[in-house]
Amino acid sequence: MNIQRRPKKTMGDHRCTYCYRTYKKKENYDKHLQCCEFFYRSRNTTTDESTYEPLPSQRELFQLVKELAYKCEKMQKTIDNLTSNSLTKQRKQITDYLQYRSPQTTAIEWTRNISITQKHLDAVFEGSIIDGMASAIKDNIHIASLLPFCSFEQKPNTIYIYSTIAEETIPKWHQMTMDEVDKIISILSYKFLQAFIQWQKKTAIPKPTYDDDDDDDDDEDAERQMKVEEEIKNQHMLYMIKINGTRTTDEKKRASIKKTLYSLTQYQLPTSATP
Image (cartoon, rainbow, N blue to C red; front, side):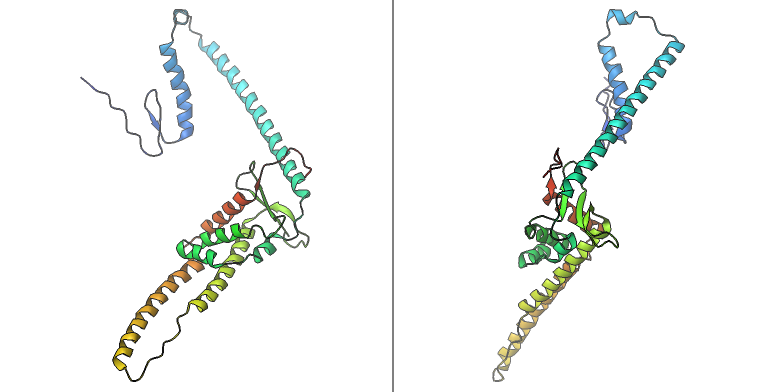
């Protein structure tokens, strides 16, 4: 008895449920599935009427394909126009929505007013610099009644920022650029470094004093003190590396900042421009 084994599905493969053929690309899989499903259902739902229907000629098939191709192209143009109109309407809604909101501070000024606390330093010590930055942004999101950041559910991963552009002096709303993300990261990095330096000063162990009359005990105390200082030094070195963010790529920092701001400033796009 021959047993037909199904091919093993590897990670990332798309397997047809009718013929078990696998595809690497989902686009090719979707194209195959439509045809395979049609032939599969045709074989299982064939009626006497369809069995004896005369086959069309090559010319008739050619005309049928031309007609279907024409209809598909026409439908695609309609879809493209609808999509374009929808995007145009969405852009206008966003512009109308933002023009009624004028924050008292720009995004860069808002970032400069962020306070770094021990909680935020601990987030870096226990994780990485991006954890600390995310924590600081979340805890300081209330420092402005009207935030200079705004995002919408209908525009995933897009953040609008209230700030000046190039040589302009009057701030206005626009999509946040990569340079602006880097500027925010630079400001926060400096703030974390300053907070870490202050933390080091507060946690420094004072030098002990020893009694000259008890040299043996003093030697033991000095040895223990050296071990403690060495452990603290190593710990501070590790913390310094995390604060500097040298182990975190710029891409990860940008992605984290954008993700945090998007989640905290997200609004449902209104149907009217009036606030």
